[in-house]
Each structure stands twice: as structure tokens, then as C-alpha cells.
Length: 60
Image (cartoon, rainbow, N blue to C red; front, side, top):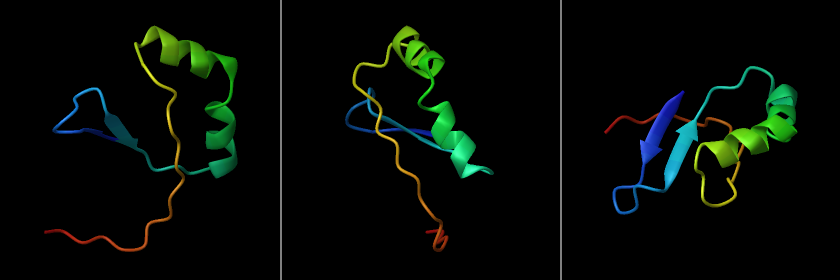
């Protein structure tokens, strides 16, 4: 897992995770306990989830 924070807005964060089972990952984010954890952790807005396929890695 990797955690990134926007340089201009420290409240804007991105979490990148490698997922082994996409179905399970989608189920986990929709369970009531996930919403409770979000609220208890101080998340201000609704999270946005994107499921991506890695195409290529380029290191600059």
C-alpha cells in the first residue's frame, strides 16, 4: 500500500493498493463498517474509489 498527500491540500490523500481479489475489494468498501471507519477517522468528503489496471511503470 502507498499513501500520498496533495502538496497544495494536505486533506486530499490518495491510497494505492495492490488487490488480489477485485470482487472482495469491492465488497469490503461497501460494508457498513467501512463507512463507520471512514467517519471515525475524520474523512470530510465521500471517498472516490477507482479500480485501475497497471499498463506500464516509468521511473523518472
